[in-house]
Image 1 (cartoon, one colour):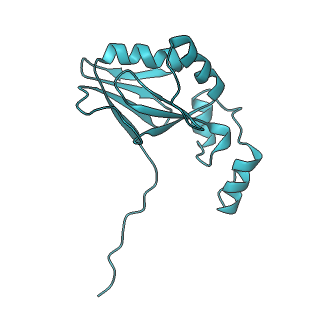
Image 2: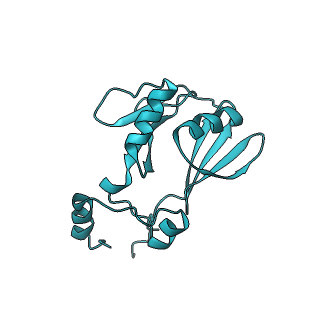
Image 3: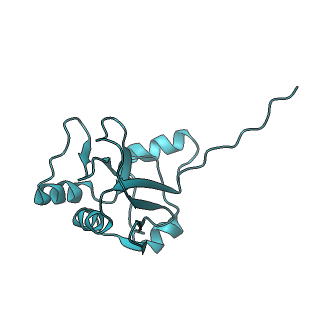
Length: 149
């Protein structure tokens, strides 16, 4: 009997977060990030991330996240650090820039230049980020996988 073919994971289309209030969540994230709103209703909002999106859904049902989190890639990690400070949001202890949003969702802020994740040039251009570059270390990691641009 032959082994059944498995689907290959390609990436993420979106991340969905439960929040208490859509307008308050949009206000909070707008304090941290410059983004385009894809669409919004009373119970959902979609923040555009180029070819991906962050979905905000009204109705947080679980407790505060401890280790469960997602890494949100940004073009300027220091700008987020400064925005958190202005907003009175304390980063969580540890070596990374993690914080809890007002509904207990844990977010790790990751700088685009230092990771293997890569947006296609046409997506970066569409986002107005065509000058965004990778660090030498990230390029080396990509080259080792034959994925360097």
